[in-house]
Image (cartoon, rainbow, N blue to C red; front, side, top):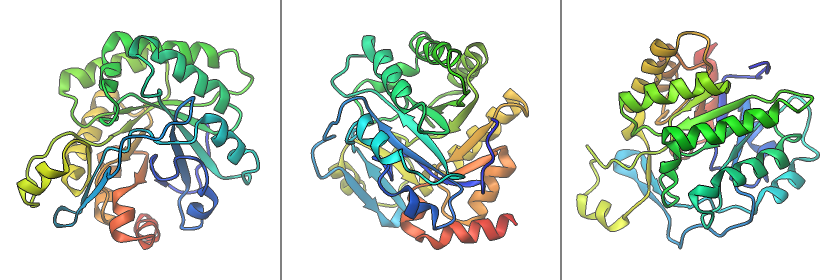
Length: 287
């Protein structure tokens, strides 16, 4: 994508939502930090409690709801970032913005962040925003991506644009998404987001039911995420950059993602359960 990453291991979006701690996170060995999801206006997110641990499954369920301080706050925090640090901007829509106007929110964040991040990730797959997944439908997704690429064409510097997809997509939907990626000319894919599935959990079903809605991450989606990466790589060929994320809890999980076809990987839940030492262990294994 025209970027020189210090390492293949990055921090996934959702940790540093407001670009407050990217300098500290980079000290753990992350080669890139993805901030956000950022929305045009500040919003509090969903009511608390909204983040839950499932220790028996090494998993999390969260329904944060894109809580963030808004894109202008993120821009202020990114103005003095050190050179050589790769920052991605994960962008979304405000909860109160109807889907028929969602493209305006994505454009706004894109324009405001353009000079302050190295790449963009379009988030239309988070299960914690009401009806957001509708934006993965072919027609709406194509509109959003086409508009962003058209705006980028008028910029002096080309910033890569990637799409983050859900692990709940079926093969037909993935094929449609890959066609849109090729048609619109975006630069890559992030596979995958959290899942709404609750299958094969060791946690007591009543406890899971009590927690309620939210995206599940961690070990339960390890295999599904890797399977999707493998399918995308075999279908799209070698030229499509893939960032693999979803259930990387160990060095082996990281290697499996890369062997499946991921060019880069990202941590989230594994970073919580295994601690910052996981980053260095993965880097050592990759070496």
